[in-house]
Amino acid sequence: MWFKVSELSPKPNFLQEISANGVELVLTNVQGKLYCFENRCPHEEVRLSLGCIKNKKIQCALHGYSFNLETGWSSEENLERLIIYQVKRENAEIFIEMEDC
Ligand code: FES
Image (tube, protein in one colour):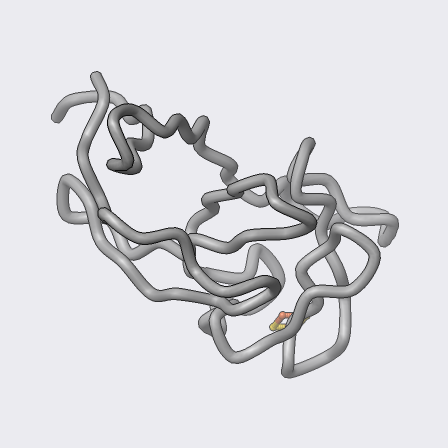
């Protein structure tokens, strides 16, 4: 199910906190492409919106581990995968795809 989350794209590399369907998320714009992921580091559950974008990865502010924005995987072993959501633009509005609870 697609949820409308915004009418504006975030500025490049800005980590915009949003929520949809009761889940805290981050929406970001990297080189013109929109990405959305859960606002919770798989390592120790710190908000990833406190981190920064580097080389199409989100880097956590606490221990510096980073997660690929396309796959959710980290280069660190033994870390859970970051939950990534599909994003689409339609008539200047932004939607993400999530399971309906
Ligand atoms: S809490 Fe995010 S890398 Fe440790």
